[in-house]
Length: 186
Image 1 (cartoon, rainbow, N blue to C red):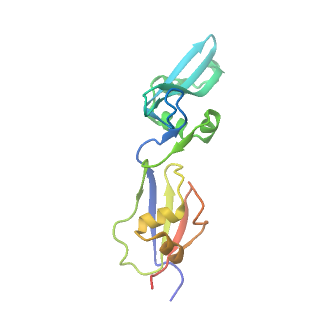
Image 2 (cartoon, rainbow, N blue to C red):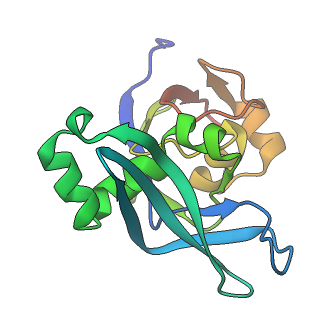
Image 3 (cartoon, rainbow, N blue to C red):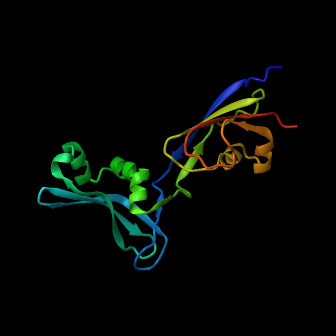
């Protein structure tokens, strides 16, 4: 029998909502904040603009500002982008929040717990073995491959380590696509 997989299946990791922010509230010292509906605040000072993303504490409802652009010349903005800030464009909120430079600059981390789902094909266990699976991430959701595979296959993590051959280390967090092969059980 050939060692090549008989079937290739797509798995997709999708965001179900925006992740929470892990940043300490100055009022209640809580660690969680949310963007809510996602709002920007644009403030003009002469020919310079400040743009902030407004976030709300989950515990006490206090609103805070996270810096998106600071003292940027008005001429440096694309008019369409500036209009998107004024209109509180949902896609712009998501792309700003998911930008690693934004998180680093504002000293926040993203809490993805409960903010993503794994979409898998329904019935495939009748297929021949081994089975090759390609995992694609729509958004940079950090997850350990062994946990993702265990969830998707309904196996224990020790069973995953025994039956799965992966192109990346299974015990390291990733947010990029990868492939793995599931070998037949004993």
